[in-house]
Image (cartoon, rainbow, N blue to C red; front, side, top):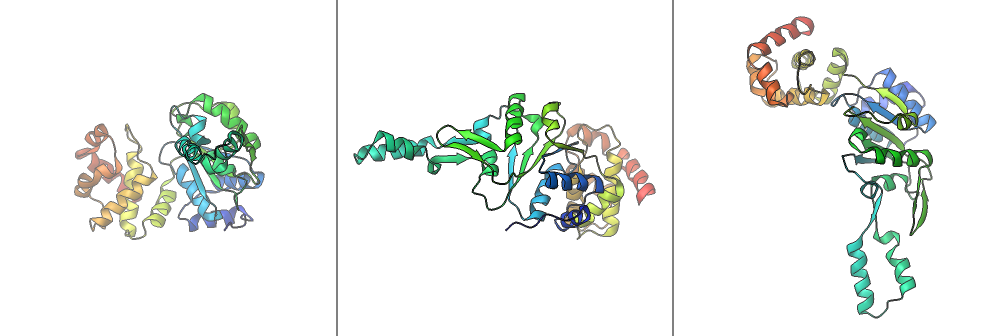
Length: 302
C-alpha cells in the first residue's frame, strides 16, 4: 500500500533515516522537489556514494515498489521495455493447429495479447494497472549507448509508449524516476535537462560516521569512529578504486564478525581486502603505509 507524500523536507529526511539512509538537506530538497514537481531526478557522483541505495530507501519510505533497470553497453529497447514470449506463442499456435481450432484473425489477437507480453522494467513502471506509482531506478545510465538515451528522452516526456499490436500504454500516475551516473562518460545535456540534478560527493567524516552507526549498530562507538576515519584517510591516497560508503560499512561489519572492537595495524593487514578491491591498491597501502595512515586518521578523528 502506498504512503502519502511527505509534507516537508524534514519529514522526508526522517522517513529516509527510518530506512537507514542518512541524507543531507541538499539531497533531501532535490528529492522532495522531484516528488512534488513529478520530475525525474538525475544523481551523479563517484561509485559507492549511495546513489543506488537512495532509490531503495525512497521506495521503502513511500511504500512503493522499486523497479530497477541496470544499464550496460548494448542495452536495447526490447530488454528495457518489452518483448513477446515467442516460445509460448509458438506452443499456443501448435496447440491451436493440433486441435483444429485455428482461426487466423482470432489467433493473431490472442497471440499478441498481454498474456504473451513480457514486461521489462520501463513498461512495468508505466503500467496503468498499477495500484500505486513505482520508483523507477535507471541505474548507471552512463553505461548505456547514446541511442538508448534518445529513447529515454521521449519516454520521460510523456510516460507512454506504443506497442503496435496492443496500442498506446500510458501511466495513470508517472513513477518517481531516479537516474544514476558514475561519470564513465558524459550523458547528453538534453537528458539532464529533463531532470532535476544533484551531485553526490563522498560524505564528510561526521555524516559517514552517522551512516555507519545506522547501518552497523552492533559495532562499538570506538570501532565505528576509527574505521570511518581510516577510510576517509584512504580516500586521500592515489588509489585505482577509491572505497565507497558501502565498503566502510562492510569493513566495520567484518571487524565485528572477528570480535574486534578497535582498529590496529594487525586488523588492517588481515581485512584490507574488504575495503580495497584492486591488487595495486593493496600493495600500495599494506605495511608501513597503512600504519602511517592509521596514525594520521586517529590523530584527526580518533
